[in-house]
Length: 501
Image (cartoon, rainbow, N blue to C red; front, side, top):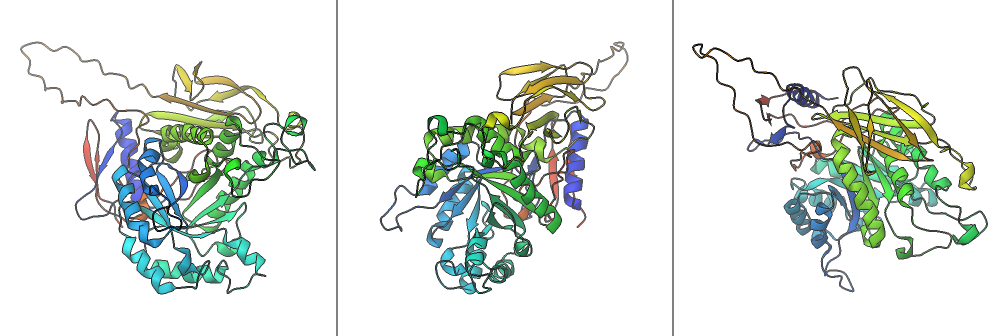
């Protein structure tokens, strides 16, 4: 963890321990500074506008306000014209969303010749925009590279991408650069990016050697591709850790199959239970965010599920990133249940996922793969003694007895538990009238929201999400931030944090 992040988190911990409201960060005039970033949740969105032939109207930037209203915080501007970038970023800034901008393909060699000068100029033009998260350098480059016989001159080769990465860095030393590969990482790409993403799209629902998902041919919930989500995300997260990269984003499926360019038989959309497992098996292992492919092809029912999960992630994202606490003991073995426990601003959250049977690669009757877990016992750390915990999205609470609560898990089920700390109110001792006593300190009338998200857009890498190590099987790497003074405000104290570079 870098020094600026240590100082900032120490300040947060001290303020929370003092019973303060969640901190708010103020940007100092003319200075860059780190912020506590929202958890990265968002869509892939192709920037359509009137430059297309045939024209596509209205411009896709008009959708950004709706994305923001539904809890999205990061959008990938995918396969677009460079002419539309500024207008898209301006609208994103207006509605409070950040954008990962793809380097235009006509300059990367994918759909034209390699043009490093244009890449440098493009990056230099937009690098300081407040809404810019960073750069999307390549989409599944390994597929083209391998198909070319690993030709170093191919647009997707590590050699070509290293040249493009150097061009980006020559114009922008700060903002993140990301690339995505299909399913599993390739070590050859470890030195050409600082954020890694892999995509995984569970799709087959049919029994082997059939071409339909109807009736007896439908394998039911949790086919082998859905079950494998846990392993796919974990492979990407470990790759980031072992390669010393700055962060990891999971690229999940958020599309209606009927809207695909080439719909295939034997497919169906994921159920609510499947999509939750698909997404939360990334979050529970320490992913820095989740992006969904792809808004343009998502039907209304799929969007409804994506936005439901986005709202949940928005409410627990801070706990998943910051203020991780040790000491939680769970009765189920790690091979059956994985969890992530975090505390931020007096709100505690436990995310727990039943992964029993996830490694079975056979697309068989799901009733024979994966087991329910009964009477799983959660022992909270010493001193953490709520009376009840709320189970998010399930309209129920659980009693806590001497720091212990118990719950059941259906096959591959996700549970999110949350509660707020209770800060005792000091009892004021009455004093004689004749004795002068200090006046009580003024208090704010503002009521903090336990799950309040705190975000100040900025043009530095510090705006990208990072996750603190938690007591799970996976620790998440941190990233380098540009030091600078930060004012941290709360209801009872104000401090200025000036980190040493």
